[in-house]
Length: 390
Image 1 (cartoon, rainbow, N blue to C red):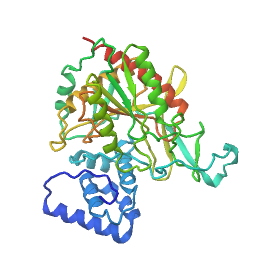
Image 2 (cartoon, rainbow, N blue to C red; image 1 turned 120 degrees about the vertical axis):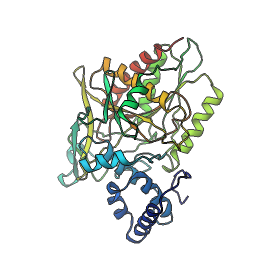
Image 3 (cartoon, one colour; image 1 turned 120 degrees about the horizontal axis):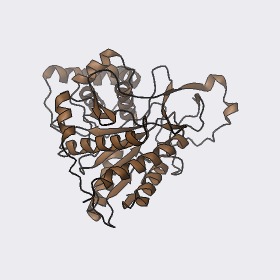
C-alpha cells in the first residue's frame, strides 16, 4: 500500500470519525507530512492509521514509522501532559503492527565516519538527558510483584490484577531441543557512540548494519546466558528492517513462523529492540539505572492486549509471562526495568504464549550500557523459565 506497512482491519467507525480521518488525509496531502506529524498528539491511533492509509500516495516512505514514533513517545514518557494521559485512556483501537522509529533515524546507517567527540562543533550538539523511569502515581500503574506495569488499555485495574493473579501456564521441558528464539524485527537499531550529555545532530542515523554494534549484539549475549543455563536457545540475526524499514513486522513474522514449523519445541520468542525517546525540543532521553555501581540501560517489556479485533488469543498468557520476567529482573536487579507497557499492540505476539518485545535503553544509551542490561536480562529470563520446567 504505497510503501506503508499497515494492516487493514474491518472495523466499523462512526460516520463523523470517518469524515475526520479523510479530512486529515487531505490535509496531509495538501500541506505535507510536517503538519500531519505535528498533529499526532491530538489524534487517536485509529485516526493515525486511517489518515496514513488514505494519504498513502502523498506520504513518503518512513513517515508511517515516524508518525507512530512521535505518538508512541508521548505515551511512553512519564512526563507526558495530563491531556495526553486522558487521550491514551480513551484510545482503544490502537493495534498497529509497525513500530517506533525516531525522526532522526534512517533505514540505513550513515556512511560517514564518526568524528572525534572533541571535533563536534557546539551548534551541532543536541542534548542528551539521563532519566530513571519508575511507576507514576496514577491508577494506571499496577504492581507486578517487584515491578509495575502501565495499563494503557480499556481493561479496568481490577480486571488486569485478576489476569496477573492467574498461574503462568507455560511449560518448559528438560530437553536438548530449542525452547527459546531470540530475534530482531529491527536488527539495525543502534546506540549513541559516546557516554556524554550530547549527540551529533549532523551525524545521528541511530542505525548500523554491523551486528556487533546494533541490537543483534544484545541478542548474542541473551542467547549465551540462556544456553549457559541449560535452556537451549536459538538466535536469528536477520535484518528484517533492511533495506526497507516498512514491512519489517511482516518479514519477521515469516521468520518466526519458519522457526516454529522447524522447531515446534520453541515456547518463547523474544523480539529485542532499542527504544527511541525524544522530547519536542530535540533532547534525547537515555533510560538508565545504577546496577551494582555501574550505569546500566533500563529495559522495557511491551505486552500487547487484544481489543477484540486483533486475533491474539494468548495475550493474557503473554502478560503473565511479562510480569513474571519483570519480577525476576527487579528482584535480582532493582531499578533495571521501566514499567511494562501493556497496550493495544500486536507486534507478532499472537504466534506463541511466550512472545514479548523488549526495548533495551534508548538511542541516547551506549551499547556498553545495554550490554550490561542484556547479561542481567539473560540471567533473569533463565531464572524465570527454570521455574516452569516440568
